[in-house]
Image (cartoon, rainbow, N blue to C red; front, side, top):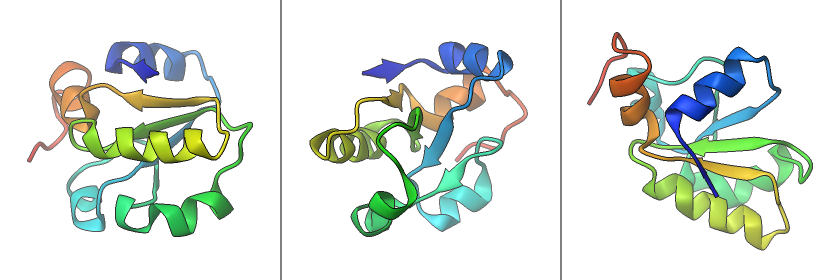
Amino acid sequence: MNITVVELKARLDKGEALRLIDVREADEWAVAHLPHAELIPLSQFQQRATGALFPDDDIVLYCHHGMRSERAQGYLKGLGFTNVLNLTGGIDAWATQIDLTMKRY
């Protein structure tokens, strides 16, 4: 299941407790990331995610455009996670539709 940047912004504005998980690499994170997000790079996801994330968490995964986060979503769903959303268009969509001041790459 996916979530758009507009939907995510609305949910964050309401104060919903969402775990924002960035699956990009540290060098990408350094360029830009969403406020309150956590970094778990896809290259380390299987090793780190199971200890850091819990099945009852409301999780939104994102990457640059949405492909890596979709893979991470599939991994978590395979483990039985049910509240996992993939951010459509990734951080690039956030930068072009929500935060026009965010640095793009």
